[in-house]
Length: 168
Image 1 (cartoon, one colour):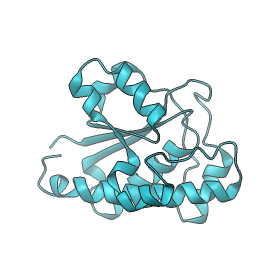
Image 2: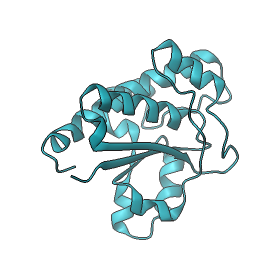
Image 3: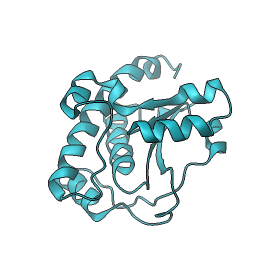
Image 4: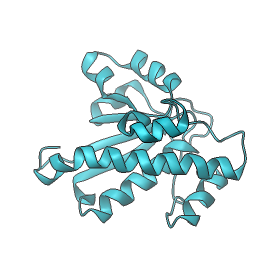
């Protein structure tokens, strides 16, 4: 069976996308589908390539029982579309950038907003954008993690039947 591959993409790959990568990977592992899915993350920009996740991201994850300490930032490249079945973004800015980088309609259709998978999380956020906590405080990282956990769980619920049947 081919592994289903998902890449979470935010701006610098040090806050939102490493959170989602860590959370989603753990959801997959706990469900018994860890071997059937590849989870990674990247940023639209190259400012933080090679760096670890923001310490506030790592700490917010740690407080909830996740380990984000091994993360190293990388940049998403247009050629990466061929590697992933789904490219999950955090705001409409990321969505515009990645859809512009996509070479065709098939690649453009892979780009989906995280909160589009959970209408209640979108309502809690006041729209489809997950706020960028970078210029905020630790409490904002916790709030963003709340959204990421909810929407990641909803996303997994939607793809899990296909994983069970080996069709993802």
